[in-house]
Image (cartoon, rainbow, N blue to C red; front, side, top):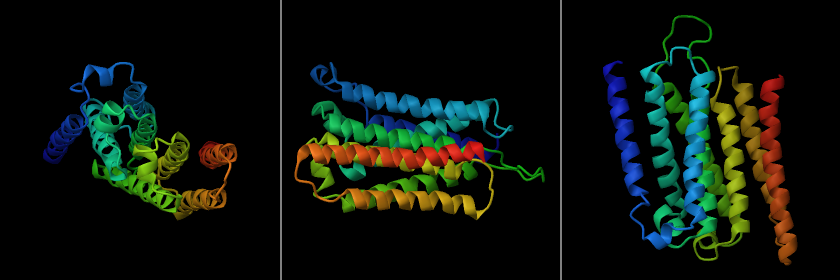
Amino acid sequence: MSDDEVFVMFASGAVAITGFVMNFTRLLRPQARRDNPGLGLVRLAVLLGLGWIVFVLATYADPSIKGIYNYFYLLMGLAAILMFGETGARMYGVNVRIDVGERRNWAAAVFLAAFMLGTGLIFGGSLWGEADPTGGGDEGGWWIPLGFFLLGWGVMVIGLALYCWREPGRFRQAIRQDRDVGAVWGAASYTLSTAILMTDAVSGDFFGWGAGLKDVGIAAGMLFAHELLRLPVGVSDANRKRRWIETVVYFGLAGLNAAWRFVK
């Protein structure tokens, strides 16, 4: 490994440890940890994100990524999930130790798990593909997947911010005080759907600007669908039905986009 790769590996380890310490839940009171499904959901999201990264490294990453480089990128992925995922969710007022642990807030756990899993999906997607598909002798580097990850993660965060801005009421209040699972489920499904789109956008070899614009167009379509479906509804059952329609639309668009990747 080169000097800069060793530095990045140690830096990733430091970031991962920092994120782990900031979100450490083992020091919570036993009453907070016992029979708390929210903590289990958050941990499952971390494992699923890491599992996706391992899958990409084992099957679709550049052939040069082998040996210690597998652990190198896996450590980078763990740092991304813990720091950009768990800690990044604090931008929306969600704290894993306070909200999920102490307050046993299931709505916060759903949102946090979606945010972390989306982060892991995007980082895994950034590792998908060859660094030099044309065989021209150019060498890739750690900065390529990192750059694509930051781009895709930034789009996911900005899209979620727009979503929350256009939602009626205060999103933080819906999570932390009202514990409105219905409102949070819409945001969680939107986050994961956007993450799937960005995973596709940052993965693979570069096939031209058209493919990237297609993903951005679908993301814009998701926002448009949200605007159409956010009309105020007075009956709770009708509002719940709107949330489910919204979820189906989001995952449907993301699924069609992912399917198109494999049939084209």
